[in-house]
Image (cartoon, rainbow, N blue to C red; front, side):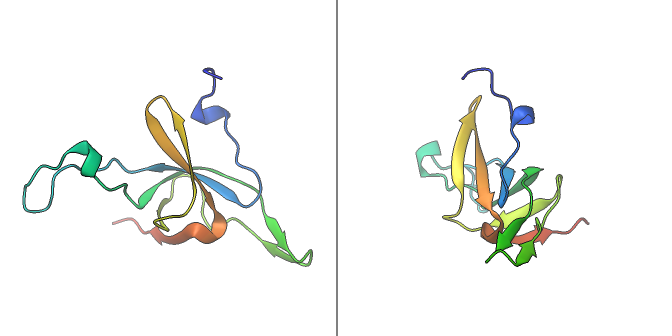
Length: 103
């Protein structure tokens, strides 16, 4: 499945596709850490949104974000999917914690 690109992916209902921000291997104080020690970022840019989901068949829950939003998500939420050395995140709607507003 080498022909899969991010542009071809459309998440199913209840899911959002996010490209995580690049992780930094440098601490605030200027110390460089090995890549094996770096922690994954918990925020990124929304690339695609799935459709609404229905709770108990009566209440519609629409996607809380839109393509292009920068979001913060749960540390252990989502599923990784790697394409061309980038690990994308498939997140459930409830794993998205906040939208980062522009400047």
